[in-house]
Image 1 (cartoon, rainbow, N blue to C red):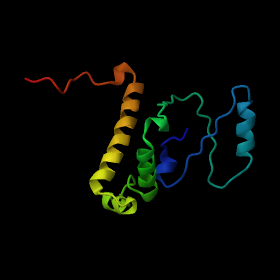
Image 2: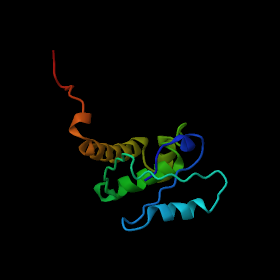
Image 3: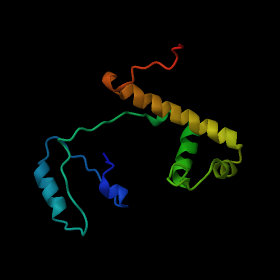
Image 4: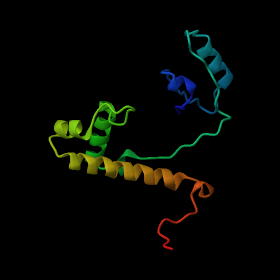
Length: 132
């Protein structure tokens, strides 16, 4: 599982390796550390709290998956943004509105899965539909 740590923010990368439960974790980490790659750190995160929200790509339509994948590849979700809806629309030969609808549908499905995976105590208690 990749983590968003300081090395990522500084332009580095985090690599995650999952080890079978029966494997000798210390031995595996030792072997990796012995590779002595300049600038690399080895860290055991097995005791750290991790969060995983299952999002099955099959929950998205084929068109949503294709559009989302291309949007990520093109840099639509980069900061700063490297591609626009217009860029994606031209590439797919469809309207900006159609691209936006495809991405919105995919995003809505993903966000719903994340919220469903949240613990009840993490969810806000305020209701937006209450009128005063």
